[in-house]
Image (cartoon, rainbow, N blue to C red; front, top):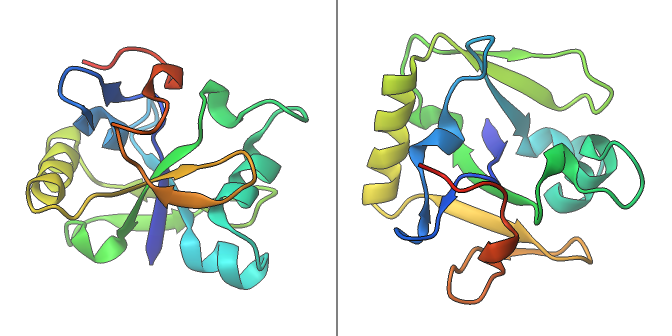
Length: 148
């Protein structure tokens, strides 16, 4: 499965990269992702448009409280064998959670992908177009809280 992980608020300005915390468990011990295939096949739309449509609490408000929309696109094959990916009941119909992955395992996966240049971070423009995130050109000052 092509996974879309929204990560906009874990950018480290000093290191000029997103930290492993963008791929850590929530309080319920799961990591939320969207299915890229589901978005393109079910809704025939871009990831950016989909996130804005289903994850904004009101018109004009950015999803999940951070600007701009930034996400990590990865294939589920990078995950450990014991991991389960479970579909969640959600109005968007493309929401899944990754379970049975410790934060240490998640950090190891993320940093391995990062160290091998395989972290495909994407950023959404105001017109729902997406492009590769470039810390030199993109508006990192708009990204949420300071990451550790």
